[in-house]
Length: 178
Image (cartoon, rainbow, N blue to C red):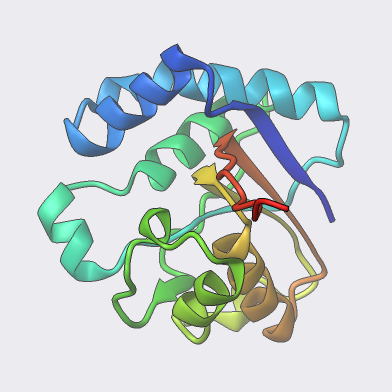
């Protein structure tokens, strides 16, 4: 099990692209972001997956945004991870069952875990049993969302789960004065 981080969110151009991708709805940014992810995947030398699973959005957020950025990235990776191999992207296997507060707004790791706990369910366990899965998302901060998705997939019978994100966003830890 591995987490492939393609770049740091502190890189201004990456942060700007991700923001435009998600909040200004510029879907074509899946191409440069997907290329960054593909290069990172190849450099990490982790085993090729059987299937790709994008981290799902809640249906309300999906309606508001019009697309799931993780699905667009997964589609790009499916076509580009290995020449001549098209990996299945399972978009209806993992479901976000309840709306959660934005993880970006929660700084405390335990609060993030609590916020996301029980938010996901596997709808079609037969499609992931004994499979090597690559979870796809745009940004990871603490990894709480990816860990919860992996836990649910593993419980449903997935064999091995790795994850890839465009960027890892570090949050500043509060250090009390001595």
